[in-house]
Amino acid sequence: MKVSKLAENLVGSEIIKIGNQVNDLKAQGADIANLTIGDLDSNIYPIPDLLKAEVQKAYQNNLTNYPPANGLLSLRKAVSEDLKNRWNLDYSANEILVSGGSRPLIYATFKTIVDPDDKVIYPVPSWNNNHYSYLTEAQKIEVETSEENNFLPTAAELEPHLKGAVLLALCSPLNPTGTMFTKKQLSDICEIVIKENKSRSAEEKPLYIMYDQIYALLTFDEEHFNPVSLYPELKEYTIFIDGASKCFAATGIRVGWSFGPSTIIDKMKAFLGHVGAWAPKPEQEAVSVLLNHPEEVNKFVDNFKGKIAESLTVLHEGIQNLKNKGFAVESIVPMGALYLTIKLDFVGKTKPDGSVIEDSSDLVFYLIDNAGIALVPFSAFGNSRMMPWYRASAGGLSKDDIKNMLPRLEQALEKLS
Image (tube, rainbow, N blue to C red; front, side, top):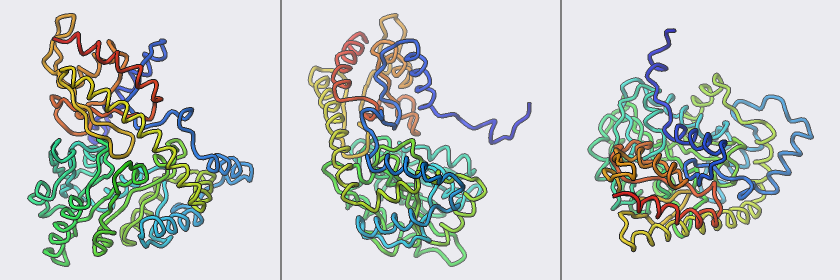
């Protein structure tokens, strides 16, 4: 059967591929420490009590018909108020768009701004920008980042590529690394974007920033920064991606929101109106109630991120212990989100059966089979398959689960020569 060229050449998610193998093994009774997906075990990390009660209440009140295509007004007003109080960002309810999680909003941002062959810039590693670029037929410019800068792009790395570009996709705290922009790092990038836009004529499309801050509340000892708070003149060029999924441990609730210049948000509303990617009405109503109780939000987030930080610290300390024992490993101190960045430099090493670890994915499947541990290689985020860095997501395991898996990791790595 013939299909479209887009469908024929669309590459599936490597994360999903690894996750499917893990799920198959677990269904067969295998004990796998699943560090792959950016999800949460809801028995370890339940959603806020108020959110759960309000979801149930909304269903009992029969709020089960279509929501407005751009989101419930009560939710958009609550988001507007929260942005003002929490980040001092001034966006009206009409400058906010709600959808079923943040993915449709990212796709709508790309589709609203990017024409075929337009230049889109993003750092690698980063999550899914390669696929959204493909779906919009963009000319993707992947900027390789380094361990020295916590795998975040610098202004010096980005600046040579800005001429003619229409979208710069940034994320902080970053998926997959859990690292964050410092004020200086982000300020430098903002300045080159402002400079670039000033150089363009009125006939040219400006350079927009898509700023994904879905993990903004899940920061540990660092302060979260955003382009518009640092440089208010960027308000007309910045589209934010945000939502309830991560900060409220509510990945299945599917309520995300975007905010930005009305000219862009209005077109995104029209686009998603045809797609029908709205969040369920009861969940929207429940999130609006939660946001209107900031003391409940802060209490929940403080407890939630404290537990995540403890688990990530246990994992980080475990990797550092292996490093001190002479293993070719490294990890970066966790700053935010759900993730630890881990280096396992074993490509080219020989397995017990005599075969060789060919690339980072090969090591992933070796560890699944021999240690019951599943990680995601940075190749899933745009880097080379030879790159020895991996994302470990702590959301699906307890602190004790992580402690118990570390000896298995050591034993499996010890067998490689």
